[in-house]
Length: 173
Image 1: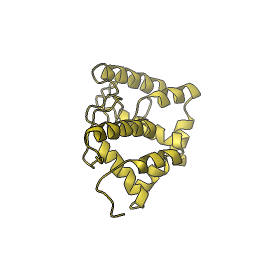
Image 2 (image 1 turned 180 degrees about the vertical axis):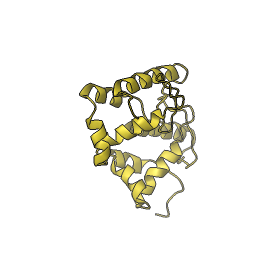
Image 3 (image 1 turned 90 degrees about the vertical axis):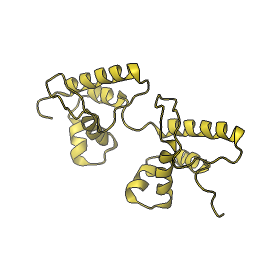
Protein backbone atom coordinates (compact mmCIF):
# COMPACT_ATOMS: atom_id res chain seq x y z
CA UNK A 1 0.00 0.00 0.00
CA UNK A 2 2.87 2.27 -0.75
CA UNK A 3 3.30 5.37 1.33
CA UNK A 4 0.06 5.06 3.29
CA UNK A 5 0.87 4.92 6.99
CA UNK A 6 -0.92 2.44 9.23
CA UNK A 7 -2.30 5.39 11.22
CA UNK A 8 -3.82 6.97 8.08
CA UNK A 9 -5.33 3.63 7.07
CA UNK A 10 -6.69 3.02 10.56
CA UNK A 11 -8.13 6.55 10.77
CA UNK A 12 -9.97 5.96 7.47
CA UNK A 13 -11.19 2.54 8.60
CA UNK A 14 -12.42 3.80 11.97
CA UNK A 15 -14.30 6.66 10.23
CA UNK A 16 -15.83 4.19 7.77
CA UNK A 17 -16.98 1.90 10.57
CA UNK A 18 -18.56 4.84 12.44
CA UNK A 19 -20.34 6.01 9.28
CA UNK A 20 -21.59 2.53 8.29
CA UNK A 21 -22.77 1.69 11.79
CA UNK A 22 -24.92 4.81 11.93
CA UNK A 23 -27.32 3.19 9.48
CA UNK A 24 -26.36 -0.48 9.92
CA UNK A 25 -25.69 -1.26 13.58
CA UNK A 26 -23.42 -4.24 13.88
CA UNK A 27 -21.85 -3.64 10.44
CA UNK A 28 -18.49 -5.36 10.03
CA UNK A 29 -15.80 -4.70 7.44
CA UNK A 30 -16.04 -7.39 4.77
CA UNK A 31 -12.84 -8.66 3.16
CA UNK A 32 -13.96 -7.22 -0.20
CA UNK A 33 -14.84 -3.75 1.14
CA UNK A 34 -13.68 -0.83 -0.99
CA UNK A 35 -13.85 2.82 0.01
CA UNK A 36 -12.78 6.23 -1.25
CA UNK A 37 -9.75 6.94 0.92
CA UNK A 38 -8.92 10.43 2.16
CA UNK A 39 -5.48 10.24 0.51
CA UNK A 40 -7.12 10.23 -2.94
CA UNK A 41 -7.52 6.54 -3.80
CA UNK A 42 -11.18 6.29 -4.91
CA UNK A 43 -11.13 2.47 -4.70
CA UNK A 44 -8.90 1.63 -1.74
CA UNK A 45 -9.21 -2.06 -0.90
CA UNK A 46 -9.80 -1.45 2.79
CA UNK A 47 -11.13 -4.94 3.52
CA UNK A 48 -8.06 -6.52 1.96
CA UNK A 49 -5.80 -4.22 3.98
CA UNK A 50 -7.45 -5.43 7.20
CA UNK A 51 -7.61 -9.07 6.09
CA UNK A 52 -3.93 -9.16 5.29
CA UNK A 53 -2.99 -7.81 8.72
CA UNK A 54 -5.49 -10.03 10.50
CA UNK A 55 -3.76 -13.07 9.00
CA UNK A 56 -0.66 -11.80 10.74
CA UNK A 57 -2.58 -11.92 13.99
CA UNK A 58 -3.04 -15.66 13.64
CA UNK A 59 0.49 -16.16 12.33
CA UNK A 60 -0.62 -18.04 9.23
CA UNK A 61 2.36 -16.93 7.20
CA UNK A 62 5.80 -15.45 7.87
CA UNK A 63 5.39 -12.83 5.13
CA UNK A 64 2.03 -11.74 6.55
CA UNK A 65 3.34 -11.76 10.15
CA UNK A 66 6.24 -9.50 9.15
CA UNK A 67 3.86 -6.77 7.92
CA UNK A 68 1.89 -6.83 11.19
CA UNK A 69 5.20 -6.78 13.04
CA UNK A 70 6.01 -3.40 11.47
CA UNK A 71 3.02 -1.86 13.23
CA UNK A 72 3.28 -0.36 16.71
CA UNK A 73 1.47 -2.04 19.59
CA UNK A 74 -1.13 0.76 19.57
CA UNK A 75 -1.70 0.32 15.82
CA UNK A 76 -2.18 -3.44 16.29
CA UNK A 77 -4.68 -2.73 19.08
CA UNK A 78 -6.62 -0.36 16.81
CA UNK A 79 -6.56 -2.93 14.00
CA UNK A 80 -7.73 -5.74 16.27
CA UNK A 81 -10.56 -3.55 17.61
CA UNK A 82 -12.05 -3.05 14.13
CA UNK A 83 -15.22 -5.05 13.53
CA UNK A 84 -13.99 -7.22 10.69
CA UNK A 85 -15.25 -10.25 8.85
CA UNK A 86 -17.13 -13.00 10.54
CA UNK A 87 -18.47 -12.73 14.03
CA UNK A 88 -16.91 -14.77 16.81
CA UNK A 89 -17.89 -18.44 17.13
CA UNK A 90 -19.34 -17.78 20.60
CA UNK A 91 -21.56 -14.95 19.34
CA UNK A 92 -22.75 -17.11 16.43
CA UNK A 93 -23.39 -20.10 18.68
CA UNK A 94 -25.28 -17.96 21.21
CA UNK A 95 -27.54 -16.69 18.41
CA UNK A 96 -28.02 -20.18 16.98
CA UNK A 97 -28.85 -21.73 20.35
CA UNK A 98 -31.40 -18.97 21.01
CA UNK A 99 -32.93 -19.49 17.56
CA UNK A 100 -33.21 -23.25 18.11
CA UNK A 101 -34.89 -22.72 21.49
CA UNK A 102 -37.35 -20.21 20.01
CA UNK A 103 -38.19 -22.35 16.94
CA UNK A 104 -38.59 -25.52 18.98
CA UNK A 105 -41.16 -23.84 21.24
CA UNK A 106 -43.63 -23.85 18.36
CA UNK A 107 -42.11 -26.58 16.19
CA UNK A 108 -40.78 -29.42 18.37
CA UNK A 109 -37.95 -31.26 16.63
CA UNK A 110 -37.11 -28.25 14.43
CA UNK A 111 -33.64 -28.45 12.92
CA UNK A 112 -31.56 -25.66 11.37
CA UNK A 113 -31.85 -25.94 7.57
CA UNK A 114 -28.81 -25.06 5.44
CA UNK A 115 -30.70 -22.12 3.94
CA UNK A 116 -31.89 -20.68 7.29
CA UNK A 117 -31.56 -16.89 7.61
CA UNK A 118 -32.16 -14.92 10.78
CA UNK A 119 -31.83 -11.40 12.15
CA UNK A 120 -28.64 -11.61 14.18
CA UNK A 121 -28.17 -9.71 17.43
CA UNK A 122 -25.04 -8.00 16.06
CA UNK A 123 -27.15 -6.13 13.52
CA UNK A 124 -27.15 -8.32 10.42
CA UNK A 125 -30.83 -8.61 9.48
CA UNK A 126 -30.17 -11.48 7.04
CA UNK A 127 -27.40 -13.56 8.63
CA UNK A 128 -27.00 -16.86 6.77
CA UNK A 129 -27.05 -18.94 9.94
CA UNK A 130 -27.66 -22.25 8.17
CA UNK A 131 -24.67 -21.68 5.91
CA UNK A 132 -22.51 -20.81 8.91
CA UNK A 133 -23.38 -24.16 10.50
CA UNK A 134 -23.12 -26.10 7.24
CA UNK A 135 -19.65 -24.81 6.52
CA UNK A 136 -18.39 -25.86 9.94
CA UNK A 137 -20.15 -29.22 9.80
CA UNK A 138 -18.18 -30.03 6.63
CA UNK A 139 -15.08 -29.57 8.74
CA UNK A 140 -16.42 -32.17 11.13
CA UNK A 141 -16.44 -34.75 8.38
CA UNK A 142 -13.09 -33.58 7.01
CA UNK A 143 -14.38 -33.00 3.48
CA UNK A 144 -11.88 -30.24 2.80
CA UNK A 145 -8.63 -29.00 4.35
CA UNK A 146 -9.74 -25.38 4.02
CA UNK A 147 -13.04 -26.10 5.70
CA UNK A 148 -11.36 -28.21 8.41
CA UNK A 149 -8.99 -25.34 9.21
CA UNK A 150 -11.90 -23.05 10.15
CA UNK A 151 -13.34 -25.64 12.53
CA UNK A 152 -9.83 -26.11 13.91
CA UNK A 153 -9.77 -22.47 15.00
CA UNK A 154 -12.71 -23.13 17.32
CA UNK A 155 -12.17 -24.24 20.90
CA UNK A 156 -13.19 -27.74 21.93
CA UNK A 157 -16.18 -26.27 23.81
CA UNK A 158 -17.24 -24.30 20.72
CA UNK A 159 -17.03 -27.45 18.58
CA UNK A 160 -19.16 -29.31 21.13
CA UNK A 161 -21.77 -26.55 21.06
CA UNK A 162 -21.76 -26.59 17.25
CA UNK A 163 -22.09 -30.36 17.07
CA UNK A 164 -24.99 -30.29 19.56
CA UNK A 165 -27.08 -28.01 17.33
CA UNK A 166 -29.93 -29.79 15.57
CA UNK A 167 -28.95 -29.25 11.95
CA UNK A 168 -30.15 -30.45 8.56
CA UNK A 169 -31.75 -33.76 7.87
CA UNK A 170 -32.16 -36.27 10.64
CA UNK A 171 -29.22 -38.68 10.60
CA UNK A 172 -29.89 -42.40 9.95
CA UNK A 173 -28.52 -43.14 13.44
